[in-house]
Length: 129
Image 1 (cartoon, rainbow, N blue to C red):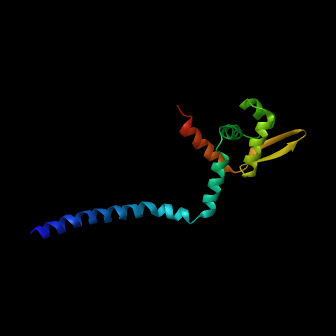
Image 2: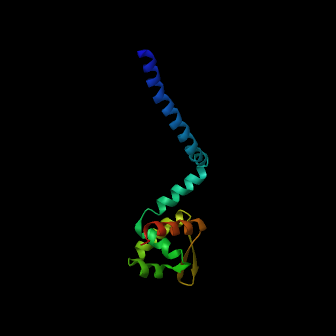
Image 3: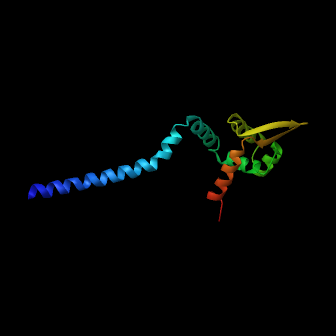
């Protein structure tokens, strides 16, 4: 009788484990699909790394409204032109922004429309009241 109770008691954790493993496998199917898309993951990592500074997030928020000059960015964020230019260079190297010259002014814009979506989501998550 004791052996039967032991066998029932020991099989219960195994059944629970199998049910949990099945649920995890179902939930992780989407994750494994994403892992197979290494180019997408690489692009996301580059974008997130480029956004990993508060000033760059401010700049992207400004640019999400449209194309603006470096001087306008400097005035809006309240730092030096050299500092803004360094951060713009990082954003440009990541492919997030592009620039063009108009006379002596350099105008910047968001190059990748997905970034506008990302900034919008960031505002919604962290800036809403």
